[in-house]
Length: 163
Image (cartoon, rainbow, N blue to C red; front, side, top):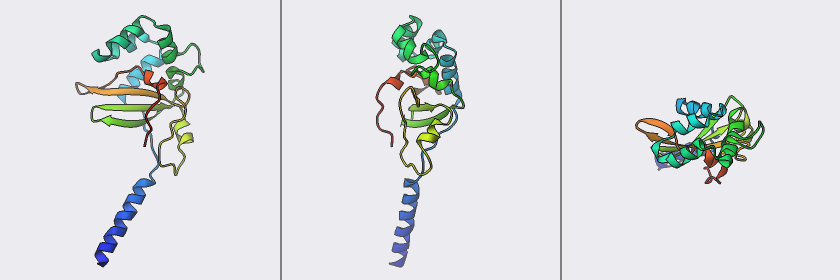
């Protein structure tokens, strides 16, 4: 009986330790850096060329200089609520949400913003405002490589709650 009580106590401590873990972020990986570099450079053609075949319609809109799309991604000037404005404030911090083993959402935060939104002791990630506090980018594993599939346009869609 004492062993069972001890095991239950240890289990409870382990579970409570997991529940109080603060969300963390990481540096951008190689695939993210490549995609983000195209956006920071304002290179719509390069960004379009890097998208996978499943994103052909989006790539064509980028190549066609769609003004609404360009404004969302690249902005018109520094300080706009755009993906580029977020990415131009290094060092970047990426909070990753796994969708499946072959899909992920990378929430990209400018210098220090993730830490401000998620101080020590916070247990669920706080994302703040899209295009101001973070850019939201969808990646898919294709032929063994992570590829950006949405040109970070999901920044302007309401994301599902992150837990």
